[in-house]
Picture 1: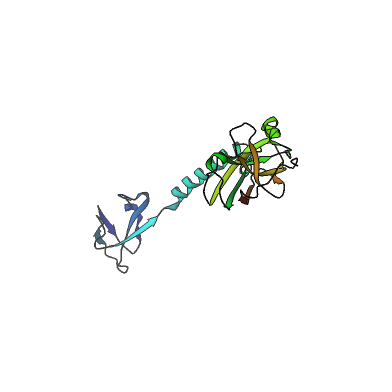
Picture 2 (picture 1 turned 30 degrees about the vertical axis):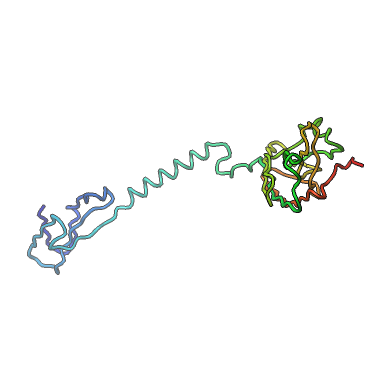
Amino acid sequence: MITTLTSTETAYSSVEPISGYGSAYRIAVENIHSPDPRAKHCQAHSFHSVKVLFRIHRQPTQKRLSQLFLSILLLLAGCDGGLAPPPPSPLATIEGTVYYTGRWPPPDSVRELRFVAMRFVPQSALDLLLRFNELVISDTLRRFVDTDTFRVVLDLEGVVADTFLYSGIAWKFGPGLLDWRPLVVYDRPLILRPGERRPLVLEADFQHPASFPGSP
């Protein structure tokens, strides 16, 4: 394209899109000489011989962004709660570490170890069986180690708080259904609310195990 400029005015009538930049960028050619009554000619095929100005037409881009932002707001406003934060998780977690001190009993005397939290205070192993639905039980813990960890997750949806009056490590010492006893007991009740995480540290000694409150 040949553009005729008769003054220092910018030849905006010759603007063209720049390839690769989209419609937001355009070229304008401006006479870089001082005013002259004689007409001057310059070629605007690219960026040669003349001063090339990049004019960023922001209005189309801003308009598109505004429309997009408005659409998002309308979408969120149509959802329940709008921009309100999500509700808290109903899940609560008990996780802890147990340290074993002293000598371990023979393998046939340590058949299983589990963390157990109870909503009642048991008087004997029979209570564990009769009130099994009031227990929260971890996976089996490792045996013959110096330390181990446990973790249980509770769903407290619709519950303000859940209280566990008796918790600790349960030790299965024999093959029978009632061959369970406490090895170590946490020293206070556990009160859990939705979204809470309760860390515990327990120290177990097989030479001095805990006992059921109802035991002689």
